[in-house]
Length: 115
Image (cartoon, rainbow, N blue to C red):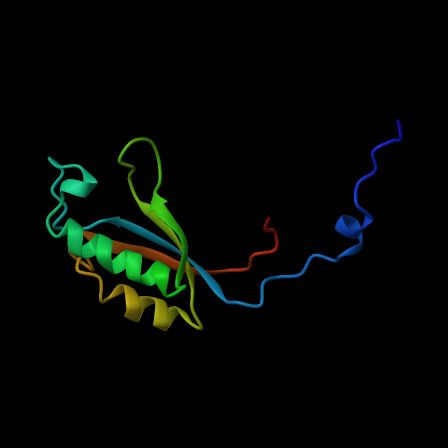
């Protein structure tokens, strides 16, 4: 039986950052968050979920979801956009913007590793 060798192409390709600008967005529970309810029981959940689904469909959000166990605390989004201003503008259209959720930070993120 022959020996197994890793594909040389895996090691001969230099790593390079993604050409698409990405931003890491952290959001926290906002002033209108009802702490007696779970995330999907918050007011206007359906509108918020539909809005976020549209951002995914348009290729703006790569990944997103709550951080932590269960319902989570803050949320993280990986957002593709040309600038932080565009991220803020699009997220400002969310029915939960500055009410149920508030932006904690938006940071540029260079992706060097991916599957």
